[in-house]
Amino acid sequence: MPRSWHSADGLEMCRLIFLFFTFAVFWSFSRAQGVKHLMRQLTYCHIEMMDAGFELEFDGEELWHVDPNDYTAKQRLPEFAGDWTLDRNLPSLAHLSIGTCFYNIPRCITGEKNPPESIVPPSTQLYTKSDVKLGVENTLICSVTNFHPPPVNVSWTRNGELVSEQDVSETQYYSNPDFSFRLFSYLNFRPEQGDIYTCSVRHRGLERDITRFWEVDVPEDSQEVETAVLVIGILVGFLGFVVGIFIIVMSKMELRAV
Image (cartoon, rainbow, N blue to C red; front, side):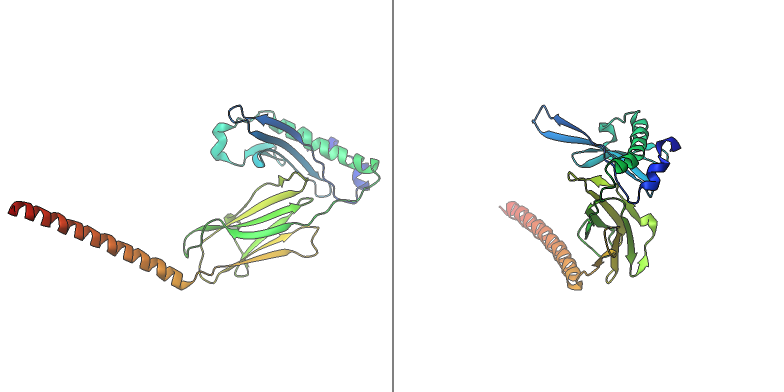
């Protein structure tokens, strides 16, 4: 990012981390059903860590975000790529918007005489995407919600050991109507009896990390019951087939006798 976006004097005076939001809110109405929708543009910047973000949201779901490292636009939900056409000016708009954020924040801080920063710690939950079956691939979801400001750091362990980064993915920072943020971290895993997973979240509003535990605990009798039900179902089906054939044969024999 060009240095002309930054103010050295403003950055030296900045002792706290501030965020700048630029919201462009558009309401559209479905002609067919009269349903109200919300499209929102979000820009934020992190002064001390020199971090920033830019994204477009539709009804609370991300459509596109622009990577501030190389200013390339990336789609969160590629399966809907055919329904949304990327504006070629989006990367340029993101560059301008993020630059304006970095330029204006130090001046706003000075103009407002160093107002106190709003710091809100996150809430977290840990749950699975699907019902758990031993040996069947699943996804653990760690939701981090209602925090301000970014960033948050999420780490995963399995039985006390850090998991491979290849098995972990994260969303961008989603915005909430009250200017707080939410983020989701995903861990792909194969449940094995007794395994213990943790999701730890770090944020500057927390005195210590929040750690959620999740243990693979599938009762063995439930597996046996499922197997027994499957076997019984197969036997009942086979028995019904045999009885049906027997009835058909007997009916034909009776007709011939008549």
